[in-house]
Length: 461
Ligand code: ARG
Image 1 (cartoon, rainbow, N blue to C red):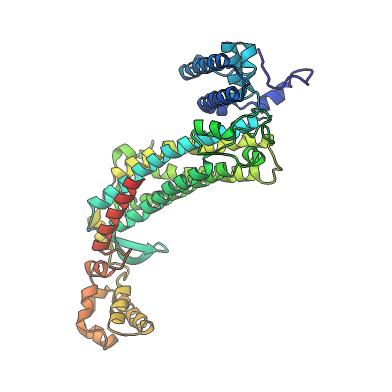
Image 2: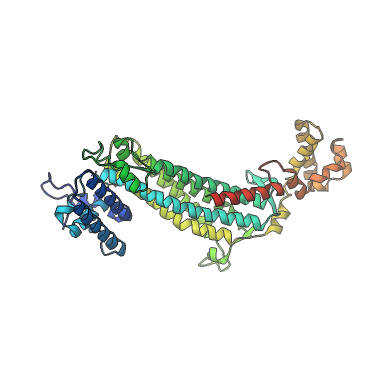
């Protein structure tokens, strides 16, 4: 039988069309556990305010425990007439403790301060779970970097060969943004750790409740400074959606490279069979679907953020029903990343790198030209001239169809008297890599230190 939380001033029930439009239990039911935790804390606040006898409080807590067990076992679920998770749980509560006691729980509380608090409880929990998943992926990247300490590859800008880099350096360039995403989740939590309980519908409570005590019981270090802000703001939800969108973009950029690397033309990696798919018509195909789905789902995660921000734009204070639309985008983001992160981690962990092929390509495309120019600078040649001289070397090579190390001592001398045979020390990939020994550079010593710091960051997080 329908139990609306707002029947009093209405003559009949809502039209079917409105009831269907209004319904949110199909997505907000995942907040049931948090709603019950909130109810427990709220019952204690009512008791402390002198509005419940100790005996009534005990019966309430018992009823909530029973309800929680039935929710967990699936014995209690919402019915079509329950408008939202709060309505359903109030019905379940009253079924367990009776209408007299059950009807006392809602005093001094509104679904507006409830939902604003519950979504934070839920997202804070999920933020920790997602951080753990991200950490696994960072760990897999670090392991691959550690497994290939000396392997060189063509470093690219504009997707063109630019300068040789270490594979480990490149892999860690994908790991650090993910470390920052983990840090973002942690920073976000400081702002999210505010309970809206006590805000009531918008103006606060008149019943002498203690919002700080409720907050503490629910794991929040503070309650809202402003009851209107507490019930109306969703910037914390949007910021969460930004972080998940950023994670999506970071995964997508890594994925795009994996997709390229797995092509015949690159042949830099082979994906493990367990993380590849086949074609229903082409027997030879082995497709990088994990990476493609990650790239695709980045669009979805960005869409979750864009949709939420658009919902919030232009909403007057305080609560508006539009705010019910804040949940599905972040729930979708959470679900999407819970699917994606383990698959990405598995794909990265099991990827085979063809380091011979990568090393062979590393010096091609005249990627050592900058090394000539910088060697000249160390010989006190002004960089403008050095750039010009190195450029001439490239032009001569192109004319002859050779690569930079193919130039003879005489060629070098003819191009510039500054180009003594000693320049050859930087005309190997190893020499080039070793020379980039400044902090953050791709020299093997620096990359080894970097890996230590990445491992330390993993341990810290
Ligand atoms: N289900 C709503 C939400 O998700 C909370 C209910 C507030 N409803 C209301 N009529 N004030 O935002």
